[in-house]
Image 1 (cartoon, one colour):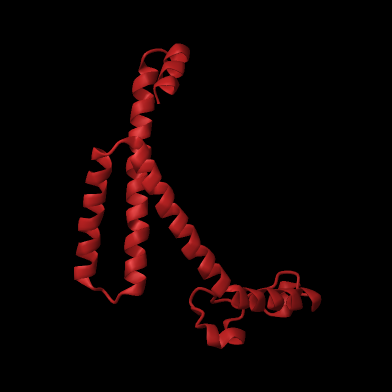
Image 2 (spheres, rainbow, N blue to C red; image 1 turned 120 degrees about the vertical axis):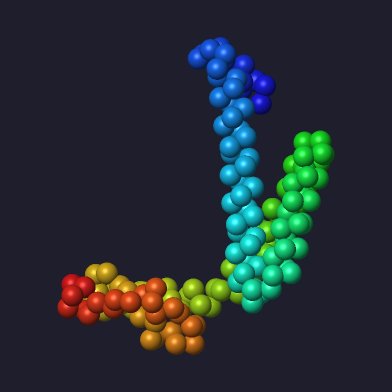
Length: 147
């Protein structure tokens, strides 16, 4: 960070050092808030409003932030690398589990294109077994309207 602060200070003046520090602080804070938001939404999806689980997650998050503030930077980055790697493994597993569903929807899209529909649409009725939210896909234009 010091080279960036010095470079900006050389080009725009001493206020550049403060700008870099404030920008970095805002980036770090917004990243923590966003990652906390993602974690809480994941818990909300998998648990039925279990308040003890949410409170435990909040305490764990605060302890993790406190721990990170007391460690050297290389330890924090190593921990972040490991956790991001684990997140990638979980995401890849989810993608593998969703391949069949994705291929079904892609094939439906391709069939609509071959049928001459200029703007194919997702019809939830064709995929009743997937539990697609009909409110998310309310309007199903007819073929004539799509052409």
